[in-house]
Amino acid sequence: MMKLSFYPGCSLEGMAKDYAMSIEAVFKDLGIDLIEIEDWSCCGATAAHSLSMMMSVALPARNLAAAEKLGLDIVAPCAMCFNRLRFSQQMIKRQLFDIPWQVAGEIQVHDMTRFLAEPSMIQLIKERTRKPLNGLKVVCYYGCQMVRPPKITGFADYENPQTLDRIAAVIGAEVIDWSYKSTCCGASIGIARKEIGESLTRRILQKAQQTGAEAIVVSCPLCQSNLDIIQKNASRMFTPVFYFTELLRLAFEEDGSQKWFRKHITDPVGLLREKGLLN
Image (cartoon, rainbow, N blue to C red):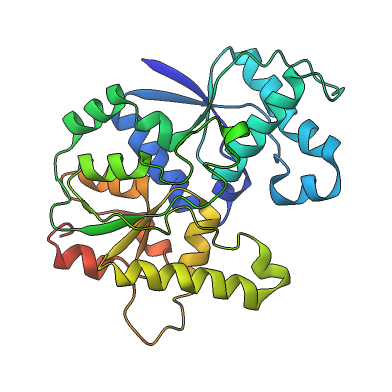
């Protein structure tokens, strides 16, 4: 059985528990053992690097050191966590900061979508699919932290990423191309400047709806939350926002009944039943 160290990050303990549950189910289905990093701690996310460059390196480094003790590559489901872990590892390898933990920087830090979009994993997903999501029209939304900056992430496709597109397509969804897939949703700016955050998020939602998409596929907890919450008081049509692992699990499981859908603000159950994907 393949083994990976798993850094869940803070959001999977709170607002993204539905993401956490679907990740656990999907990796179990794929025969991959996720070993949660012992005594992991916050990576600093958006706050640390705005206050202290040293802390933005040191906080993720503690988790890198713990993963290195396991001797396993890391997979991170949160785009920001992935970004901060990669950043910290690169700064340490360049010897730019003196941190209190021993980090060699040799293990691989994987973005979860890119790991599952590798050809071997796509084939495994295809073989595991029992209930293709035929007829479901989606757009894939990556946000900005998963793919940028390319010098940190190492990704050349930051303007037009394809990992979520490939995963959604292999389980039968109709993936619609669009030009807003890596546009910033505002992240946590909505806390300090609500009007700016809502303006950015509403624009992305409107552009997604204009493509004819019936749902949005994401991997970032903050992107999911922003796009979901903005629809809370909407008077027009709703567009469910799915974590990609929720759709994977839906395609894997024959009865398709998933308890985590109840945690969504924009209820996806009606759409899925209309498409014959839920009983």
